[in-house]
Image (cartoon, rainbow, N blue to C red; front, side, top):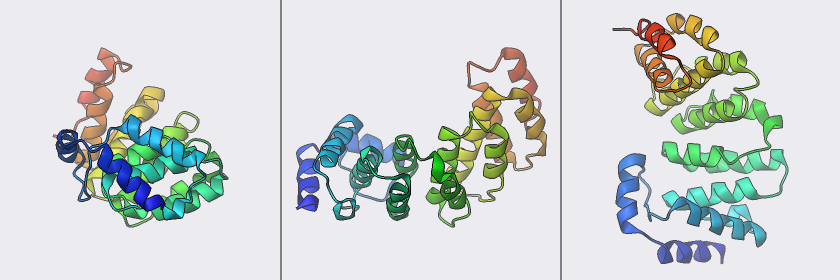
Length: 220
């Protein structure tokens, strides 16, 4: 019944023009209905009210994974129960949007930090990204150096892993500029160092003088 309900909802709200746009920016191999995020989240909240069994939710399309993630985020279950289901769900992720959209809503899982740190040692590109994005989103402000040390321990050339690392380093630079400025010369990976610097220079919270200092650290 749940699977049929989800399919019916997606078909009724399908937006083919938006789907074309999403496919260009998300690069997923899954079917995309083009349903907008607020509509997906409202539907997920209704599923929570109906006490849906997470295990019955379909995970075949781009939006079905998002619905499952949003439903999980809004459910009143223990942190350990949440990460147990999340561990099953992230195996279906094939794009950055699944990681970022769902992780940003997974509040209240601070007790499960070790789980997200273990994700950094997984083989999957998007499992690693989930771990990095979670640490950045919920622990960076409290533990800049600890988080940076953890995410830099990840040695992976996958594009979306490196982009997540660069994003985290850039955010750390806003929080503790001196630390990150002194750290950057030790990052030998050209893409990672230069992308981190580029993202820091995009921030309005980095001064013009600091941006000039940072640009001198680029690897040519």
